[in-house]
Length: 152
Image (cartoon, rainbow, N blue to C red; front, side, top):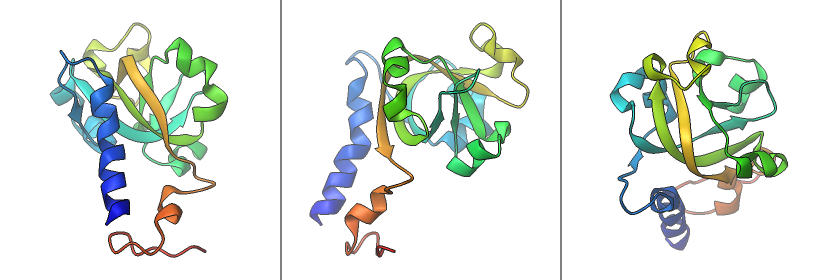
């Protein structure tokens, strides 16, 4: 039960990262990809696999999407200076991220030309590692009733 409470608290941290004047909507990356215009201009929090090392930084649904360059399964990002500084720690990891979503039609300068990408995040307020694929988060909660996972 304690582990479940910790997971809930960790899920809510990105919501509190934005200023108190902004309402943050927690949205799945799949929703952003499928219906970008629905979230255009809104401050959102989401999770995804971060690939910063490429020409265009992208947030993918899954690690495998990044490895196979499945662009339609991603959104673009305008990384902050802090994200670039911390790139070694956050890239190629699943992250929790909060920023303003821009749909394809109103994409940030230069980003609306990425074929297959429906939108992206600007004005990023926070970006923190959620889980490292080499050490998945679920392995830390072995034995909890909620996850029922075993270490391999």
